[in-house]
Length: 252
Image (cartoon, rainbow, N blue to C red; front, side, top):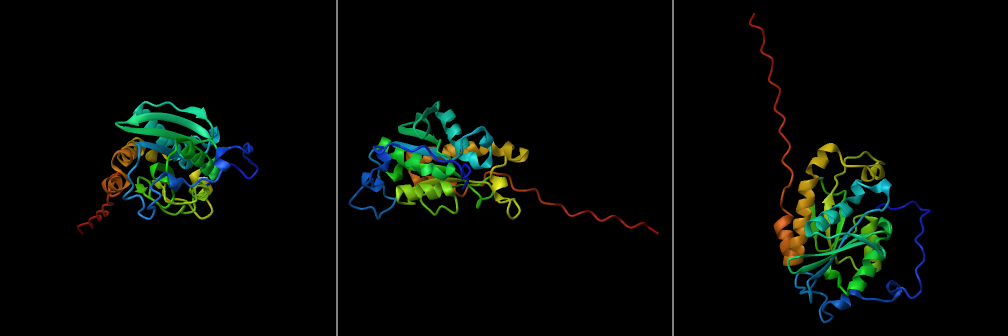
């Protein structure tokens, strides 16, 4: 969605950089039948690349647009993993039962997230079916977490760049609802703003649910994880406004 201003230019990579080589990520899955999608995909190993999207830099810390980083941090804390700076981002490794997780927070800025995703998929020798993107979403109300096996970028520049560089939009994404409580022309200000104090009260609950979704995605597959989590309501329903009690008329 948003990244560094237009003056930002990533440093050029050497011509031998492996991400510049032609590469078909689907070829790592079952070449004989890619038409079946993720529903029938059987991973050859239990390793997964989990990528939280966001922007680096103090000016972006704690903003709504960086909630992908926040979810990645919660997962790392849950599995006792520590991030270290590596190529194209901060990386942490750990396990949930028999599943190996490679957590990534790209350092490319949001609009170039695909560079980091493509590089680490190649480095770990993983197909897109073993990729999960953690991302913010204005189309969902705050408090909504929605797991999808594929989909459009919905105007999100990070997802758009990932699809462009992978050559497909068929990768799973966990969407964290931000809501759309902003007036016309104030979208950038909203996503680069911070959660309200009321919203912050629910963040531990929401990040805990994000960890549970990632766990079930890795251990049980995307379809079961969607069935288990997508219909859950995490926030309490708003209190009903009681009608005002009419003032009794004087008895005279």
